[in-house]
Image (tube, rainbow over the protein chains, first blue to last red):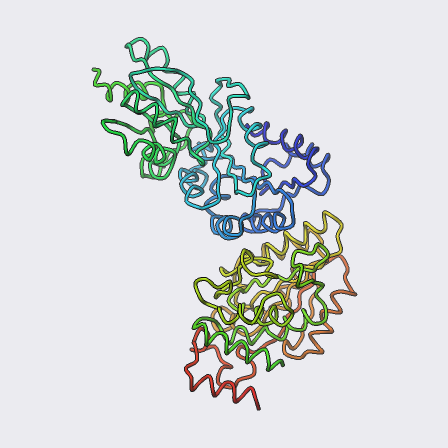
Length: 305
Length: 258
């Protein structure tokens, strides 16, 4: 996904001279084609994230479309006040593109894990949140948003979901129905679509006719599609690589809170710090981001032993 | 020392029941000389693309900016009369979403300089001649973003950027700078030092910035007095965020009328 991002900066930079990319000492080698093709519009500013965001706001004030790119906790947690005051309050448009959300830097420990980026950005007015997990999702949604007056946060994951979705089905703020079913609704956020895809055979084997909704845009959220599906099935499982508070799961709850007789469960990161390292698969296993756990949650909701 | 603007500052803050009088007094001469003699602007067209920019990073001194904006026609006396009211455009910190002529909303310290660096960079990219001025406090220079921005601005050779430090001694009350002049110099900036209440000295410093720019940003260390002009306001004590009662207001006006 990072390569897709750097390629796309080149493509967009060539057609729009108001695109400026600021990085906090990451991806600078990968961005060299953009830097060479768009002189004066690439800056590896330094290791000073709050200042990078302030500078980006000054560029936005002067008519540019800034892109700020660095590691998730440094952009979102350290720079939160700058995002709030310099961009959102002042009604400035900007594009914040992070890598390293959740536990993507799986061996680097808590300083490089970020479980609550969606909660933080979502809490601010005038923000959009996109969690693309295939190249064409990023390309399509970046093109649709980079010039608008919102702060748009792109959470680039380490793991792609690998399920091809045609460009024409990718629309900002719209969930995508990937499977029709009547027994239960599974809502997969971003790269966790991969876990759900891996349990297809297992669910069919035990006779569960599930409906699958894929969500790439968390704000604005597609409440209607979730609500319609939940009303039909009466049961909802959500899986997202985010803290249990404040992520897309909360939006699913908002979508279904006025419906009757809906049961639901959420596969998220519990309210604790993970002290482990290892590979990303170790984190998946520890936290339950697996096909087996999706099946287990479906069976529990459907009371299948 | 501009006594007329000081009286307006005190009267407006007293009327609105909110504000920082001594912090505004320490910077009002700097802002007045900047707008009077140097800053390019069109009050009827605040977004004029040939304008110079002024960002007040130490936002709590905003009344000094408001009275200058009123003097030059960006806002009206009626706006000042509505200062601090819920429906008014003027509050305790400047807001670019509401106030003509305010280039950046500030309040939390350490935000204005990075934004000004971004504006300066934007104009460099476009090879435009506009100049960018930003005013920070010496207490604000405790913030890490000030020094991050100082480093970035010299690295980017932003010689269209002039930072004014209101060196009114606030930092020394808490966490003194060992040598603020040498600190800025060591960060690669042109450094000028002036009496921030002497109009001819202020004027000469801005002129020097405009005419003698090499490939460095410029900082003007303005030695000022917090509360300058009224003896009992000249302190770092209770008057920082105090609203005068009628008797105190009378005393302030009388001293300014002398």
